[in-house]
Image (cartoon, rainbow, N blue to C red; front, top):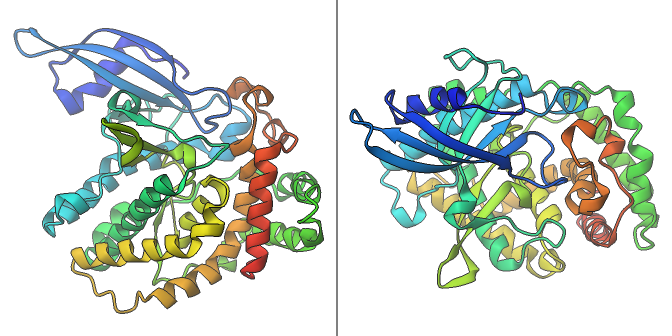
Length: 415
């Protein structure tokens, strides 16, 4: 399903806004540009509703409709029957448990984690019940953050240190709330949070994965400073492929195992700005919870830093950012009443050294779509029929990010 109609909107909105809601009119247009999103079709909606017994109350809703991608190659990669359901569960149930725990523990307003956009309705199929397997009729309705003064960063340039600090601090709290739920409400964690972490069916063969290795290696080999490390990169790619097809190769350390985003890069967060200063971010929302997972929290942190920050942020601020993450992580755990004695700064550094290498095979292929020029990418999701449809010749931003990533991973002993 790539369109939405009035009847769809009414059935989606009524559980949230009341059975008397009538959609008087609406407009729809594509929300994202080519190259900005691969896992779904995104529509920006302006919906005029009538509400109340006398039908006199009118209201305009600015919404985003998130639909599954067209059938084909992307279904093999993203597994919408699983991932659409996972994301709906995050916006409806996981979000509720995050908020409930913080309210129960009287977390102060200035430290209350509020990173989930509001959900206005969802379905996995045409059935009224939200089942555990979605089909081509799955829809997720969210508030349109752009109309609330939230903006995306520049994916090719990356985020400056001010935006990076905000993202890291809130990411730490996002992870800490999950760990607090695991410790304080183990049954809730099992029934809701872990449920949302169900692995997707990655219907790509090992042979298909390995077919992309020459392209990835070439993106490193063409950088003179990185050419000598090609063998290390190849080893990291091969290990990543092995882990993908044999999950037993790296079980997460339980101390830092949590609910992770798994795709935390610049296009999957939006920043709100001070109305008096459009350059100062004062809030952040996380989006795209399709591939959430149960793994080490530092994987989100490392993936974000090496894919989504502007030049020299890592070089100049890495230690500061890791310390900022630890401070917010432990502070959030304390606010929920959890013992933090095991979560020393050294234990976090040890966890980073153990888990950061696992992200090498995640970061490298993602740098291509993140840095791609708009005129070099597929102009519609239906055009994507292989990984080769996404990979393009490395441009200057990709070379810069690849160089920084490879050299820093080598320096830290991660590859």
